[in-house]
Length: 342
Ligand code: DAH
Image (cartoon, rainbow, N blue to C red; front, side, top):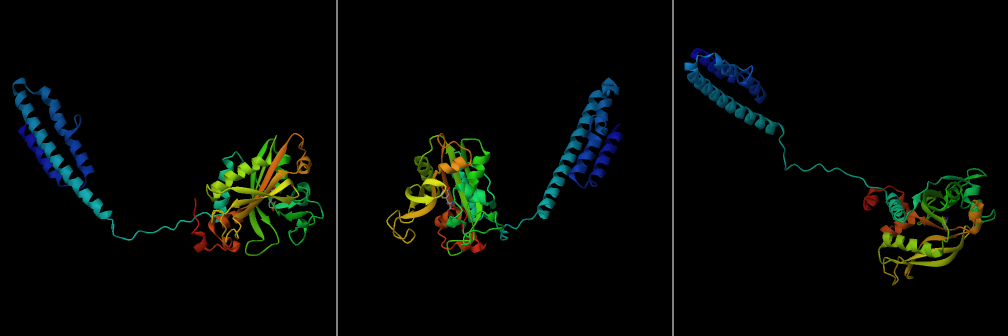
């Protein structure tokens, strides 16, 4: 019996040096310690075959062997794990003094940022986005909007005609007609889009962006327009800003208004930005002309509407202090990277 114990000890001692990882130590340990198949486990099981008078002595020896073996495995396991940790540290060495790799992140274009901000503000007042077309026909862009054949806006000087019938949209107002033709009443839409005009100077570009707003419901008045625009200007230009409506003319609204915002640069005292007047013109709007409602089959006795058109470049230029519209189209990162509101 003693020989058997001695041979197990020797086997463990010899085997120990051959283990190269904590995983191997674990497997090696199992060969001895597993309660069913391990060599020491089996010695325990054999207890019942030992004559009773020798049993106590036998049990003591097996326990001694077991404890010795456990200590051996424990020590080996600790050594292996320490070695493995060191290897891992060496292979994953990190130099915290190395300069960091800077990852350049882009940002949305100022026009996109401004468009998103405008949409967010009006979405908060219950408007839904309605898609615009870039190519329109004469009817949607002009006729249905009460812009007669001899109106100067139809002039070749202003409009890019693709054919006698089709043209590049000159205003997002065409979306009003599409919305009124296709949507159920009441309507509350915001239609962003690209528009095109033969116009080119420091504040005009042949292609620019507009955002059309249209509400058609019962009892819509100019007060609704002013209320909504007040919310809009406060969110875009700051809480102190207010609006002022001036009479104007657009064929598709009656009455029509130009909307001014109190100068957010000087607070209304008069400065370069507001040309000394304390007010800055920001958009056009009005009450939808009854003729326009009727062109779309809407009963103008029961329903009324408000409409407004916002120039997105103009809004962005005022908000970010950009004095030339070309800066918004040149894709110069020195300019674009300065504007990041999102
Ligand atoms: N369509 C006009 C333009 O391009 C802007 C405009 C004015 C839109 C008044 C409107 C409005 O909806 O009611 O100059």
